[in-house]
Image 1 (cartoon, rainbow, N blue to C red):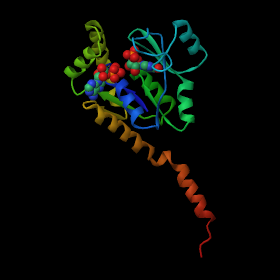
Image 2 (image 1 turned 180 degrees about the vertical axis):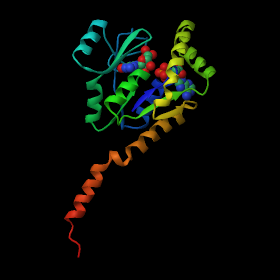
Image 3 (image 1 turned 120 degrees about the horizontal axis):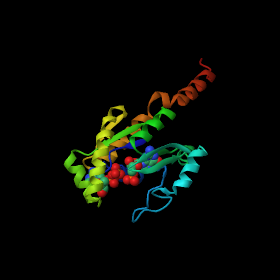
Length: 201
Ligand code: ADP
Ligand code: 5GP
């Protein structure tokens, strides 16, 4: 499950909410060259790497996708996603819109969700509330102009008004997606095998 949004759209808090709500979800930690913010933990929030290390990871094909966001490199290690899938859980990827497009190309079965705050005023308040300096808010709003242009290519749009409801809506999307026939053909086949072995009198 890929969640994108303009900065301040709620990706981080919605992800935390999903992980708390339901053990099916697991965060696939990504790596970045940006500086660690106060309170962030290496290996939990991101793998914080040097530009040299990032370049090496890219060269070795260790990244599923990568992008430059606000002047820093970000990338999803293949292993982060594969290890969650191997556990039979849903990897939650909170990445930018370019990354979302790359993931959808590689995994057409990925479900993409675009989050939007209810309105611009709320988004600015939330960015300020998160402690972003006015110049950072301006950069993020400028980037948001191009990000919302691609919102229509996402599978789902969720308006992030009340956090609890947003988290529930995203979890509901996962519920429905896991019930799609195409994702469950093995169960149909298993039932069919049982039927074919059964002798009817
Ligand atoms: P993103 O990761 O998309 O940049 P965040 O998850 O950091 O966005 O959210 C930006 C700020 O807005 C954070 O301070 C967060 O706590 C707050 N926020 C996000 N969603 C809501 C919401 N539904 N209600 C109230 N505050 C919210
Ligand atoms: P921040 O620095 O505020 O944590 O994140 C900046 C942006 O980078 C956010 O839109 C975030 O979702 C995105 N991002 C984080 N990790 C990745 C990643 O691995 N790949 C891509 N493409 N974007 C990422």
